[in-house]
Image (tube, rainbow, N blue to C red; front, side, top):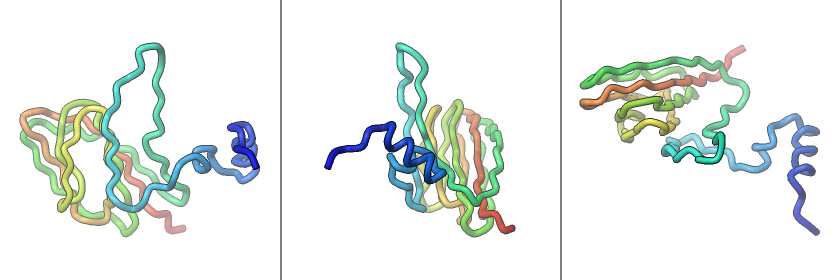
Length: 138
């Protein structure tokens, strides 16, 4: 028995109608998911899969700009909702109220949006892309 090639795995993924990454990565659990920023490659473009959002969701894409010394308490969303924050610039502390994380430019944080959560800046403003993935009820 040998190891399959990427081409073989890609053919299997196509046959199953799923992305190749589903065969190569483990599904993230429902807990908080923090991806620290990584340096960009010097020899060309750098692409990183930060988070795959499974089907069956309604997605909202928001841009959140927080001035210095701002505190916002997030209202819990519908059950099963997950928030994904990608920090474009600046620094903030965010996430579930009982598990806040310090984030900086390039960091990604995913957490349960159906529980109390918060966004806080210090002396540095923040520009954040927020993706809210809510279960579709159709």
